[in-house]
Length: 256
Length: 328
Image 1 (cartoon, rainbow over the protein chains, first blue to last red):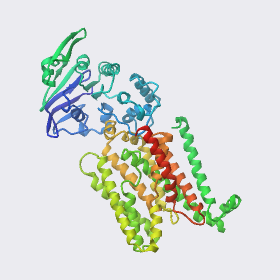
Image 2: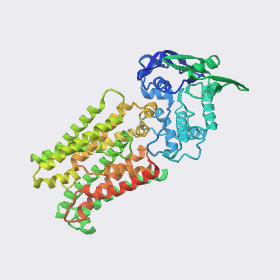
Image 3: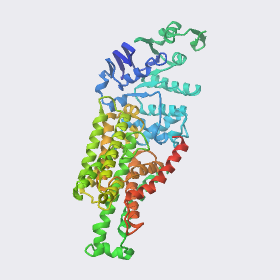
Image 4: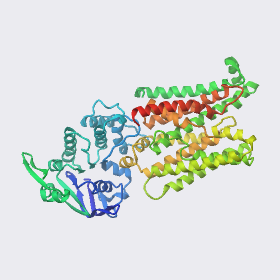
């Protein structure tokens, strides 16, 4: 079972404290929502958890091994991350780009086989880009590029998914579609996910756990049921929060 | 872009055209042979015409092919390295170092046979200089490499201008020919074939990694590439190819920019097909350019760099215009 753990993690960037002494463990079947106001350091934390940047102190453990000691290739087979921005410079087709998710699974001279291609085609269909397979990635809209990047992540098939605002640039339908896919991966595929979000209600609807970053190193982590309440959200976003009882559960609105 | 099913036939076509272009080059020149004359001459290298073909024209055509393919491959690599489809093999100053060392050698009257080694030496100094200054300890920085390289290149350009302005008139012509790129005195050292073959195999082995690197450093790392090592390897490969090409024929312009760009338009950006296509077309393009350079004002010979630039500049402007229309 693949898990990702942060142990006494201290991260700061440009003199700003993102988290101090952070202890969390992502286990299979858990869907974490990472919440916090703009510029609080959610991206930096995710990058650190992916082993892309080093923390000031503490360790990130992937399958109980310190992540800096694992070769990138081995990490990429277990852990995938959707970055906040997706910019394509070179002309490649949508299918070729989705297929890059197979890269860590193939050896140097190996080419993608029919199975790999099928995985890519399935992922493209799942994000509603069917019929765009031969189109150049430089011609995609912001939302389409975003969905393609998500499809490539699905093709990579990592056990741990880190997603940095995957719903950016997406309309309501595609937001739900992507969240459903992640939820499906987590519950049926026994994977774990951490997802940076600004939409608290998406977190309320989908996530099992949440990590809140308050700034100045302060944080709180635990099950959504316990932590997602008006008091914590008011502290988090520094604005009044009202609740609305819906058939699906409690939802949150900015108050007056 | 051409359909995927036509990629293999395109490679075979380019291969046949390459061989054909070398034969064409061996048949054309200031001494006109005619096809039947060429056919009898090529069978017997001891005749006067046979010697002309086997000792002069064929080696020069093969040298042109090797130089062209090296520049094209180097261009592809530089474009990935700097993540810019408009980068060329000379942008980071490799050719500047080579040119400075060679011109300095010419000033001091060093024998022609030794000049390629000076070019290699100058290129190596430039590679190490840029490598040392841009490396630092932090993460890979393409911007730092680009800035260091471009500034180093302009430093070499200034030194080259200095030499040119101080040199006596009678040596200027040779220097200008060298700077523009010229194949008339080229000899093809055996090891350059090794450099070409070795880099080609290595680049092909890394081709899928190049596709991933072209998507940006962070994306490449997330997909399992040890990017810091990989990008330095790409830099060194591209530099060695450029240095070798420049030591054989001077700084022939535009091949390393136009050829990768044209091939991208034709076969797309998958390096598993782009690298062989650009390598073959680069060779073909330079053999044909050199044949033009030898024949267009025959018996007067032009430096091949003039032809590649005359063909390359309008082509490049056309491509740039297309890129502008696409909103790059």
